[in-house]
Image 1 (cartoon, rainbow, N blue to C red):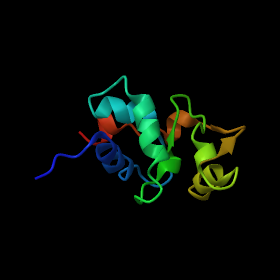
Image 2 (cartoon, rainbow, N blue to C red; image 1 turned 45 degrees about the vertical axis):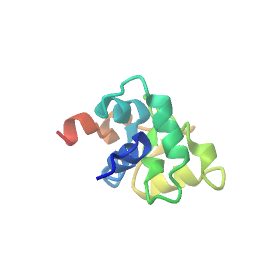
Image 3 (cartoon, helix red, strand yellow; image 1 turned 120 degrees about the vertical axis):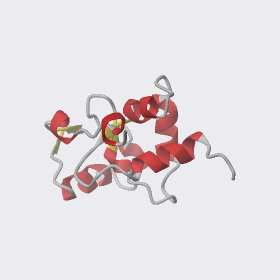
Amino acid sequence: MEEKNFFDKVYEVARQIPYGRVTSYGAIAKYLGAARSARMVGWAMNNSSAKDVPAHRVVNRVGVLTGKHHFDGTSLMQQLLENEGVEVRDNQICDFQRHFWDPGKELE
């Protein structure tokens, strides 16, 4: 069986983020045993559009929509999150800790 590459592992985790919840690039990297690879997780999210991955649910460590410029239209990432009940103000998740989903705790 072929071993999954890092991007595929990132996508596997991202697909498990529940509706209405968000996680961070760093949390995914840490869960995958590559704590210093948050930027690589970002690159994976940037390349995920054809892979059925809810990339809009992955934000930076303080809840800022840093990946929004990779979505069609300037506010699509925000709209997708708001459709799931996540309030966003000034490109940042409101009440970030309430919406935060930690794969290290939830998938163990």
